[in-house]
Length: 318
Image (tube, rainbow, N blue to C red; front, side, top):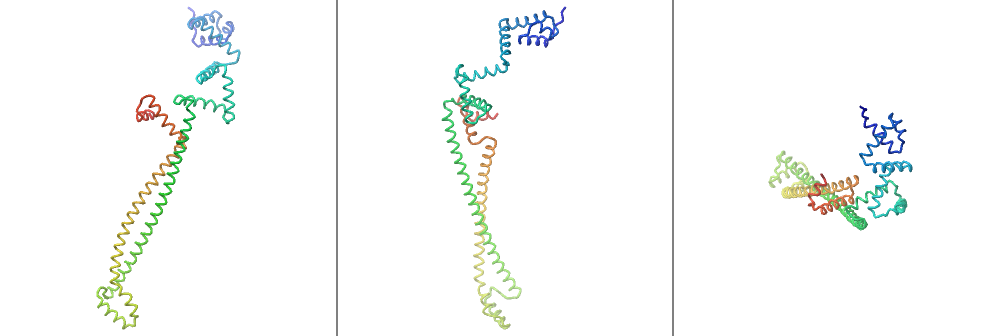
């Protein structure tokens, strides 16, 4: 009983036969008899179909003679299909490709970029007809311009908010300075009263104070200066109360200013986050133009497939 040949030997025999090799040479290359080679080839032809097998061998031999590999042939077929999709007739392939190449060369595009851009254009045309691409681009340019204007507006608004923040900080600092000055005056008055009290000099009783002043005169003090200093004690009380009331108002004003300052900081932070997000997306290649394009693409797909917009977005993200 003859030994069954391994499948890899059969595969080598078929490959060499498809390349146009003679039976005896195939047998010598694989250590087989001429009859074994004939049996392998005939069995394969019968399984595939004699006509189809012979045509396949003729094609392989022809491609080998003109120096074209099967992969290159497949690429050529793919290019031909693309041309047909674009509506280019077979006898116009060469002139069409030369025209496209020369136009792209004048724009500084390399052949690698040409193929990539053509592929992108074909994929893009699945959603938007090629004839409508120019007005679509114009629309996107206008939308980009509007978004840039919105960004400029937000930047100006940010500058205004920062200016308001600076003004609020100045008001707060001025209020704090006023509060410090008022507190210093009150402390001076309280310290003065305490010192007079330590010396047994009454401040609230004017008659007693007159006696004290008369007593001071005996020690050759300048009475006019002393009277001038202490005659305003009563008015200092009212001034103290006025200062306390003013301090309360200043505190309330300071709280209001701090609240406004906090709100302004939140607005500025929000604006900075928005700008940071725009810049981050733009650095990733998702500028306003790309994001708008992505949004419209998802929306159009949803409309075409009768999918709710919110559900379409979730499906797209998944």
